Amino acid sequence: MEAVVREWILLEKTSIESLRAFLLTYVLQRPNLQKYVREQILLAVAVIVKRGSLDKSINCKSIFHEVGQLISSGNPTVQTLACSILTALLSEFSSSSKTSSIGLSMEFHGNCKRLFQEDGLRQIFMLTMEVLQEFSRRENLNAQMSCVFQRYLALANQVLSWNFLPPNHILCFFKSHLFMDLPKK
Image (cartoon, rainbow, N blue to C red):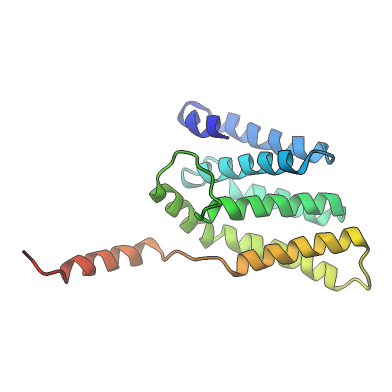
């Protein structure tokens, strides 16, 4: 994760995208990975997505499309993995204490969060609602499906309690007016 960010400018876009795809495939093909290992790999994917979001070197729409396909599989294990991917993205873009320490400025993290909350957050909410709607149509849930349902409910709660940053133009307005009102020495 740290190496990708450190070497970012030296890597070609295709190499970065290949690494992201490889990491997702690796996790998908190994459903028995230890939870910690799986979550760390998905966090690395989220960092790659975040780092590539500002310079458009990573196509976020394709990631949400891939996650949508995982969700529509109907397989509870795969749906849980999709939830983990979405949770990692939310955590990474939140600019809270859960954000990875990847050596980038707070301004970078803030800009990524603003960009994410304009579209990515809505995408996650829509995918989450699709899953919850699917579960609402079922008569009864077995234990595994109930666990998946609870994870998506927690994800919906995370989205709905997002701590929004104001858009940049509002911040510029406040800064300019704030300094105009200060007494001159």
